[in-house]
Length: 504
Image 1 (spheres, rainbow, N blue to C red):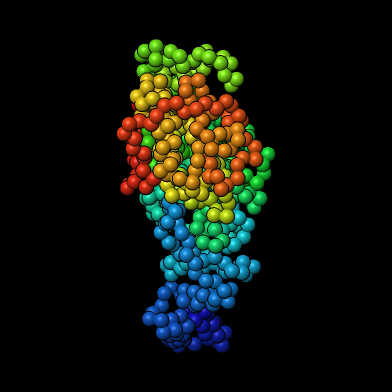
Image 2: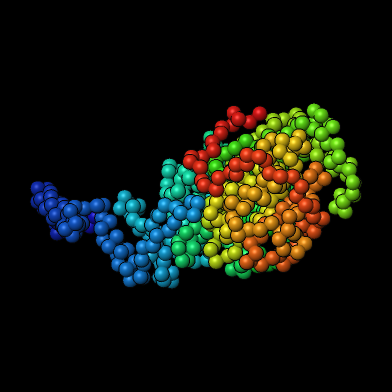
């Protein structure tokens, strides 16, 4: 710029100040100045033997590389979000965060240059999600970010599509709510994630005081883990509840999320169901909101009320009024009136979630309340089942094909006991009152519904027994089905995908 403008201008001014000369001499001064400026500009901007000029970015990138070398940066491998073994992607953690790297120039080379995440304050769940605000740079966000591959305007984990419907953006995990939309309005926030300091693998950003994690599947509006163990401050919680449009659920409202503690570094709220094949499935809606299931409701009792004979008689301390329980049961199997009967929801695998729990934390408890789909839920945890200390599974103690089953195709308590022997021989059916091996399960509902508890005997029992498990225990009466085939622990190929046309 100096040689093109300043030199010819200065020479022309000098000539005029000296008393003026011919216009030809003045023009010659300008031409000579332009030629000299052009030559010197070309020499000054030529790349140092790198094969040509790249928009003047060579010296800036060399400086950036020198600073990275001086700071002791080393390339590390970060395992992207997947079921226990994911695709490796490159990440560069900062060894000395006090020396900040200058911003690279805005050109093609700089855009392709690997960026290092600043190792500062861990991401907080209380920050606004990227669905509500533009994504922040690592330095602006003040958090270590998990790398993600880019596909158009959306950042997806490198394990895509096997960990679908999870999506990773700027250190925050989201769930894609609908199968046919990948836009901001259909994304639901899950939690902040961070790279694990040892492996670089993305993990939930639990607070430093958390030592154990409890997983509660099917929390509805009142998570039992919250009411039972909120006072145990070293316990982190992961809650699952997929229903959105059935009613306004607190898990999906920003105002009440904070009230329930979901946006603290203690609770992770996942607005999805759990199933063997991740993706999207249709959940069947019931007249009673707490009875929704991924299995279709069994309406035999509505067509023939005599099938309920003998189910709601007798006495139990937990249910002094069996007539109320009967009304609740019939409400569960009734179709929802005045609106569609099914809703498409996201479903995730259990082992994908356990793989994001930091390995130094124990998984002390898993509870399922999936209205007959419970064994499928348990099977989705695959090879991670032995990591869990105690597993609570809801079931009905009924003979094969009994019309009192709440949902079609549900496994009985005896079926689940047999499958658990195959899934995880380390887990033993126990009595909730003692924590010792038994053949009984506690009552959950007079419709022969039970809560069966499986424990690894080499792991600690409850510090405080959950309220549901203080009820009376009943022996499992009925045998498993004759040709029992347990759901596989292996991850099925592909993803479960539906579109909105599946809703009715």
